Length: 504
Image 1: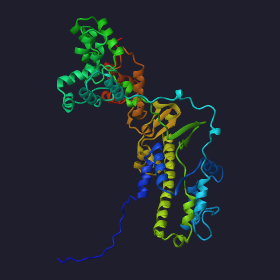
Image 2: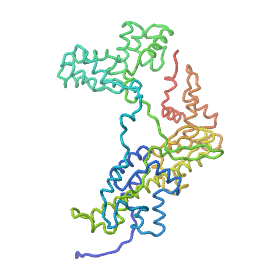
Image 3: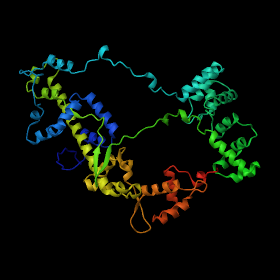
């Protein structure tokens, strides 16, 4: 068979992910803070982008009401060419009549625009009180380092001590192998055991313990004798105490029921199972900033996007003036390739316009998605969490005429503030559980909320079992299996009935 070359034409369709399309998809799944960081980065990298000041934004809102992007779209719809569309409106002080750039005029315009620093006469009479400023918190490692430096350990032993505190969890437990750490510090294992016991008696007491029993025993050694009931329970019956098996502890120790309950109360109230809790990095509060607000106005709901702190963008008028000059290439300096310079600015201008359009489309899509959610979940906004309906991404996608993946990206890591609380947008999409009375499916999140409310009202001394929860939910018309109740309870971080039981 002879080998030959042929030319053929083939017509087909394929999906091409252009950089602009990838950027638009990426913008959809960013929350407000992430988008703010991306815009700030683009402002640094793209000279054709500039931030609209609050004064300019106010004048735009009070004036024509159209953004710069909308003006460009309107001019493009009127049939103007891209060269004409990039030509700015207004004076041309920066570029003279010969098409050359007046750099002195350009630099002077920037030199006079910035605010000057206040002189010493303009400073306020009363400076801020430094005593009112919050001091930096001390972390666990620094606190233990200070105690090691104040101890009577030798320099060689201090090396092992620092290796030990370098292998602590956020709760303060030693999570490495003491044998490996001792080998690295070239210290005998018996000596390493003595050093770790010294560290365990540092503040906070019980730090560097290897398990919960050891942590509680170290703390108990400061308060009680070795033969007390508290020490016996911690040393031998901690598992029974966890299961609230008071009868087993009484039988093994020979103590009566009241003494065991009193010892259990002391262990709970006077001991800390996580000695480094106050030094944990996650102890600071992290507040959620909603991306969307939903307000009730009369009998209807108004949706408002949160754009606080997000820079408003427009295309730089200066670079549009440069590109609008037909003689730029002929009048440019001979050092570089003027065509490459012009192409560079044109690419940056296209990227700037596309970014503004992508942000505009993102905000519009989020608004439409929230509008659809309000329409489908009207009972939730009117009456509360218990009236949440089952809903899937497909329902909103069909309502908006987009793909389900678009709805998934829009609802990722975004929160909405509503009259009934602040929720993640994903919260409104959940599966349904059939109701026993035939009135329709009930949303899984609504069932979880019912389980939470039932447990909150239970008798602490006789907590509700999973089977009892099933029976109570059936009385409310919700047909659910016990294993599903257990799964929802664990998802709510609620302990089992045996562990929720109060002994005193």
